[in-house]
Image (tube, rainbow, N blue to C red; front, top):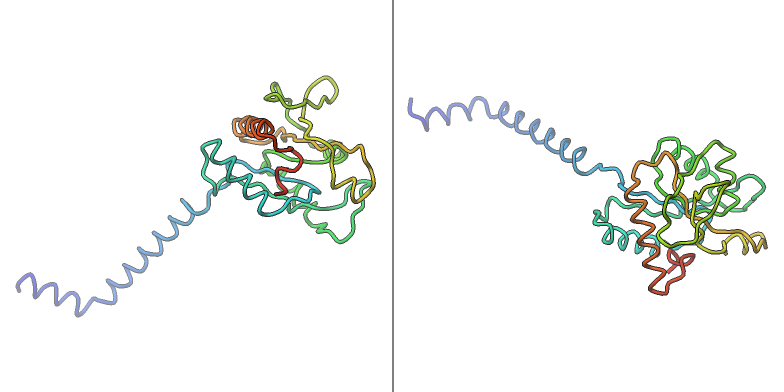
Length: 208
């Protein structure tokens, strides 16, 4: 039997076996590509709590920071989808489920940075959360908690003033102590300082 005849024989009597093997190989390849390349966790996650940031604003900031830090855009997440009541702060018509989501992500060490009202900063501490001590603030205004700097001041919290009338609520940028990406956090401080130098107000950078 010639080589061509052998190939024809195998294909005639075993074609379904060959197709089955190829299909299984294709499924394995797709599975490997999905979990090896398409399911990467963010290298930097910043959550804005109780802020009127726009989707365009947060996406633009994420893209700008990714370029500044040399990161893939797909692996930088800046989101403001966290509006909820806490402590004495009572809001109406908000997604209260995002409160549980926030602390679930906190416990799982998925949050690198938070932009939050000062009252929520205190609430997180009451819930057992700790913020990283900042050895440098890249020239931004330090927020002193006790005898150490654990946040930077971004300005006044306009959202709290609009919904409650409280005019002295500070807006803070802080970093969970259990966050994993310390170098990216340092670069994020640099990015915000550079943005400030260019004349953009820090409290409105995510609301464009």
